[in-house]
Image 1: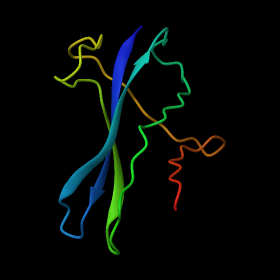
Image 2: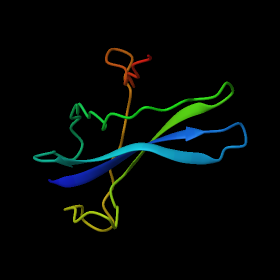
Image 3: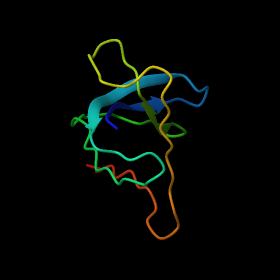
Length: 94
């Protein structure tokens, strides 16, 4: 199965208000339902000042009206983070 994933990185303030920092579409090809598939998604570079008390939030979706994706309507994608291969978000600090 093929689908398109859209990743959005938000900076959230202490009240939960978010600002989009970076985003990127990712086409997942040849996925087999029920079989795990590892992806390595690199978001577009951005320079952002994250004030104390704020947090970063990664959101992943299968639909974005700004892009012509290949996701089937009504489809589902499951994400996991197994103990032997945990999911990570690497953020370089400068």
